[in-house]
Length: 355
Image (cartoon, rainbow, N blue to C red; front, side, top):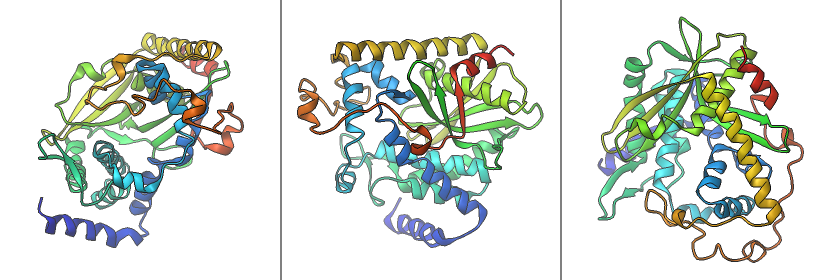
């Protein structure tokens, strides 16, 4: 894409920033919710877990421990400009854009949400090892959002974004689970969608990547399975049909520049296993804490994208040396730190499986 077209797109989106239409208002709210600072702050507490935190625990317990400390240390704004992560910025922007389109069916609002959610230099883009463009820039994200309107019309024509009890669209749905063992599990569901005829609910989870979509990568995802457990409880709370819940992964490949729908069904047995896994993870964290030892996993020093762990070369140092004057207190006053759309106890989630 040439610079003239790039600048024209950015100028057009900047012009509508003051628009007060409902669709633009929802775009602003969705873009803001996808970068919720209060949620990131909450993740620093030692007795709060999430899908991303537990994934880190599975990969390398030491990295998990250090990430909790790092979360309470402010990141200078200049570092964001100096070391932009275009993979993150692209996924973030596309996610906000398609969520907004799903909620509003307004392409201008959807592209504006993507514009607001872009967290990298506006005129930059990802390049490969040879310095060639890799299809991840803000204009590429806006084009992806434009393509999504046709994808939704063809692949999700029988589904609408559900509405929350307060009348808001069910996008970036925040939930909390009090597991009763001293831990709280938090999460954000990209969107909850509802079938027009059957009224059943399903999880919408957006993903972006450079490769083509592969079923095996998401079929047994811990993330979406957990979300389906929560959606089951939400369905019960709203008096909607229960049973097996669909999880729709909506995947955009920057290589093929196409969206792919990866649908999976999660039954009660699978959701019960997720509840057991969650408690086992919390027990593992307790054990590491009691030993004051979070072991390192050398196989995770370089991730699947070839990026070296940010702690490599320093993870052997004491926490007090890496983060002086940082204290990880246990969580108090959840409601004051982060508002959630739904909160459940572990027992309530279990009861929801018995319907």
